[in-house]
Length: 392
Image 1 (cartoon, helix red, strand yellow):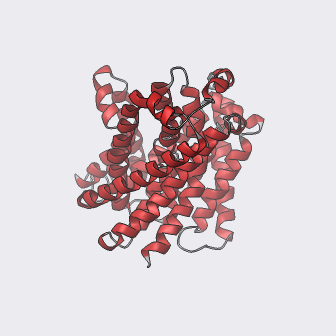
Image 2 (cartoon, rainbow, N blue to C red):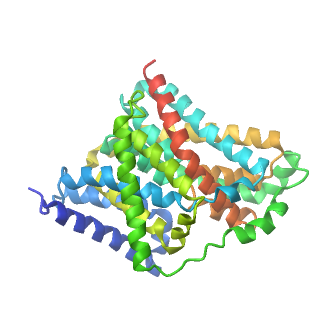
Image 3 (cartoon, rainbow, N blue to C red):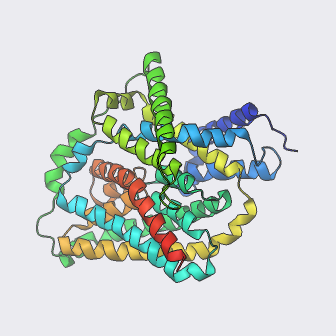
């Protein structure tokens, strides 16, 4: 019998584990470790190890409750900060390369499962569908899509390994290419760079300075997220399933994403200044921890083949992105930032943007936000296409 069985005790344990991870992350001696192995890995695998060691249970009422009620709330809170107006001002080259990167992920997933499908498990399309969400905007989309289409917990863990090893490996390559950006821009026949025209606007677009969190604001954040999430959950139950991808919970995810985007245009978006996304991230990581607690450590043996899948997948993405970038005469700065905005999202896209052009981190941030928005919808599309291909 597990050492901890009561759902409340499991909740306390998992929240404490997340807190410990972030406490250690802030220590100087641990920074290099977390640069190599990001928090999302620890949040998933430490609960998995806890269950393997008999500390937490494989099944608990808490796990289903967190999935059902906290994920919709998290998505609403996280999308409040989406500055769609600022994204629109990035210009056609920036948005064009971003969409090319997204197209590369969609087609790369379909081509990869067509090549490797015979050697992959029958439900590989579900895990790869979740991974497509991560590679179009970040881990938020991965959790949302994976939960919606019912990825088994062990396969989800394998996808996190692929996401980390292949995704961060590609980031290293993108950064390495920065040393040759002048030559590549000349080869791409770049005549006028949109970077200069973006500088003035983006210098003021990242002006959401944090404000002290007040008690009324915290209550409003929770009511907004949990209340509207619950309403979307009930509406989703009324809508028909569309195949194996857009289920009733899939509808819930789509509805809350649209609602969150809509609210980003209203005064409610000011709650982001007081930490709405932090509350959303806590809910999201708690869900990730519960997924890890249900998983079997032995499933990691499936990882090597999926790593090969990931390499082919990223190769297709890169080929399409570089080809479209050359067609648009886009500078390497935008091509590289677009790629990382897809693969890494808001966390690493600003880093790559800064490597290519100093002071242009806001471009990476805005493109990462665009990827976060696109990821849910194109992730569902990719999952559906891969499900069709897997049946051939």
